Length: 118
Image (tube, rainbow, N blue to C red; front, side, top):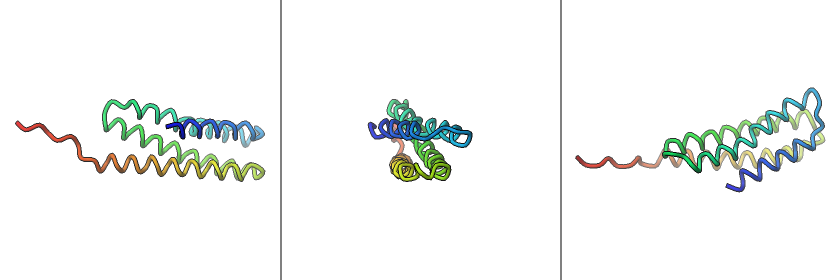
């Protein structure tokens, strides 16, 4: 999904625009890890070995997107001058969270493969 890669790139650009100091440095590190992990985990999900593996990896994508929202919220509080861009990225992370959540729910609702008759 190109959207997850672009999201990671956008977060990296945002992180570069924030002045690193004792408050922002750890927040930025956590933000970049979580945001870039969304795309990495989606790549893994795309190559899943089973439906269960796909569901698991996709649920990790949703968790990482939610975590990204948290770090963006913290950075918006720490850097009021960067708040507007943080809100835009937060909305993107929210959209990804909803997309991955819907995929996970759809996986739960899919019937498993029928058993072969004896």
